[in-house]
Amino acid sequence: MSSQPPEPPSNRPYDQDNELDTDELEPEQITAQAGQDMELPHPVNWRALTAEDAEYEWLALNEWIDWLRHTFGLPASVIPPAWHRHPELVWELSALHLHWLGAYDPAQHASAPIGWLADFHTAQARLREWVALSGTRLDRDRPTRQTIWPGEEPQPAQPETPIINRDEEFVAFVIADVNRRAEDEAQFPRRGKAEPQDRP
Image (cartoon, rainbow, N blue to C red; front, top):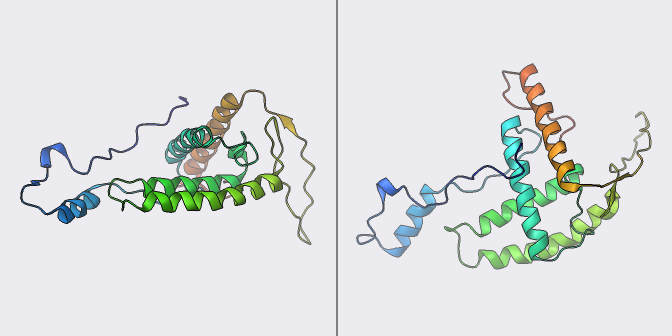
């Protein structure tokens, strides 16, 4: 499996075979038409993704997070290498990614990016809290510890494991997740989606 995400849908505001006649439209009408024709970002429900959709979303999110951490110089206390192994981080980072896609959509208002940057600043505090609670670090990782409620079976302690090659481990993780979802789909063909259990 390639470590690069598939090509996303085109962001062109209209098809080349059906171009807008801008000589007959006001600027507001052009913007409105462009917004109608473009495929806008949509929420990603990680619990219900099919195997095919999950592969795309994992790779797209991973590519964006790699860009984000380099662009803003983020430490592992905000985005650790094994973020993909912690559902609380997956949901937070995925929401931030979708917010970014919406803010920088060509049909969006010009002030939207400053709103995203403000929300990104706030989200960093939440990410630091999630990372501290999860116990994942720059060079090692362990599953997030769970609070056992009365009547539940105690969970065995999970040891820390070293992170040797993050990219290889990420690809292996995605392959395993996609395979599990494909198996679920084979067992529940009528539903056409993965079972929500044990998913991010």
